[in-house]
Image 1 (tube, one colour):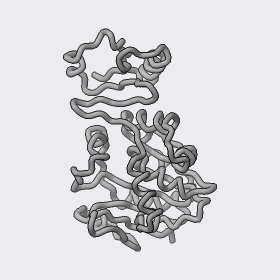
Image 2 (cartoon, helix red, strand yellow; image 1 turned 45 degrees about the horizontal axis):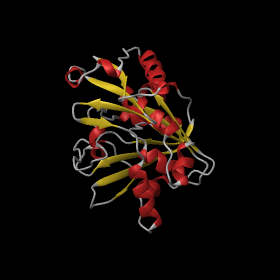
Image 3 (cartoon, helix red, strand yellow; image 1 turned 30 degrees about the vertical axis):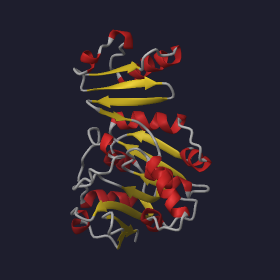
Image 4 (cartoon, one colour; image 1 turned 120 degrees about the vertical axis):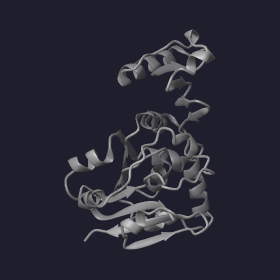
Length: 255
């Protein structure tokens, strides 16, 4: 069972918002005063409407929105280091990018920061992740103005990427990006660990790539770990990445 509640001593706004979220998700809203710690253990997971954000609690894990990874990567770029995702994209600033595996949105924020006139459309199949990030994109305010500007260039939808792509017309996007969960997870990646219980683990196949290429005008960019089999099964035109991190980006050009 899944519920929606609030943090302790909520404002009326939090209560109203939690009630509305529960109605949207078609799950119960439970007043926090009625919940004890022991009660919470019976739920599969639960949404908490806090002051300024929505989180999801699962056992001892809290899933919340924060663009920390995007900030680190942008800082590295400004310090002269290569970011292989940005290298693979080769953006002119006007692209419409489809991010088929949105996750917590850090890479979408980084991509959007390089789009002066473009936009990122994100697809996230996991409802808990979608709820957290869609509200986070609207409400999170960073000290860095580039983050706030980037978030305004992103739209995210709760959908399965296969279903979404199937409904799109050919060449609807300039670039399609896909970052499936690694076959060999990097558990030391603290930013990813809270996401794992809610992520959907799907293996890409050749038909998926064909559909991505159909809706792309320029190229498809895929992300994989060096120990994964993705680039053995699907041969990109170019592979680039960091040997140290083991993270690789494969580019398949539209022909």
